[in-house]
Figure: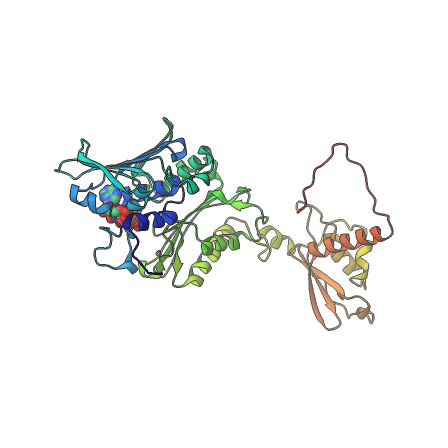
Length: 464
Ligand SMILES: Nc1ncnc2c1ncn2[C@@H]1O[C@H](COP(=O)(O)OP(=O)(O)OP(=O)(O)O)[C@@H](O)[C@H]1O
Ligand SMILES: [Mg+2]
């Protein structure tokens, strides 16, 4: 078997497999090119979710006819003037988006530089089919038609026009959020679906592109650590979603879907949100270009940090602090109200003891039983909270009979502090209560005595 060099057309088509996975990916490349060209206004037109037609028009620097020919060649770019791949400041740098798209669609490129004449090149699935003068204002217009028409395998995997459209809109929304200085307009099947003015500040742009409620339900983040800056807005834990689709993350102005950042975000909210709920955030991380590698994947949505721990720590710590300052504290850091209550004398009425708890903790005296019993019953937060640790008494001789020792007090309405034979025991009372309930149900099951009651309306419960 002899080795041969593949023809350019085929190489481009192979590259297109990664770069142009779906219409939204092609659109992302075109809008990024417009941004890199210094546009102040970018108009996008989408037909049938981008499968039929995509059009991006900008008022950027434009290209000469000679540059247009080069732009459609593989590995031709104007964006790495010093070959400094570790110092990328533009969104594009690989020099393969246009030829890749042109190899799997019909691409019309029209452009004009200031003071020059407009020119047009039409490439159909990798072959130049027309070229000539074009009339347009300074800037560039790119039209992509019939994407994947000749790549049936890829076309088959496209989703409905509706979901391709949603992906296209998401791409523009993210880029528009990154660049509030630029005006963006998007039309889908003739209907205007996005329209933002240029020259906005970042927060105004985020608000314009997300829901209006976010402004009242979010807090600002703005912190520096060395040369790294983290800014943006994050939603209060009470304002969350069932899917993580409204998490806008940017590194040096580039929208990213990076696992490290998503993980850090999850870590920051870990104690404040259920696992299946997600905050709404727009976070902008700015790091020196040498500290981050954007050349990880052709789609350029992943990055690698030179110091991932610093970035993670900054996000988790920074967001937690911001949420703390707004009264949202994780379980590890009890709320102000709870701490204040802890300093009060116990004044709540003494409830009757929970009998099932008896086997875990010994109750040597009336005082201690009171301190311990009350929280286990989960009185609502509005009720006066008893929490002052009582003066310790000598443990009675039977501590060994109780695996968790003798309850000595409660801290922050959350933890039971007990004195065991071999040391101090701290128990999360909520978890302990769950365990006790489980044990009771188990015992009941064993004796076929779990009390049950039919519901008036049936409740469907899904188990996986
Ligand atoms: N809208 C535009 N306005 C002005 N010049 C453009 C525009 N789009 C493309 N170009 C020029 O064409 C070149 C090739 O574009 P292409 O998108 O293929 O590669 P790139 O942007 O350099 O890198 P990448 O493949 O990472 O996007 C660009 O470097 C730029 O000089
Ligand atoms: Mg590009």
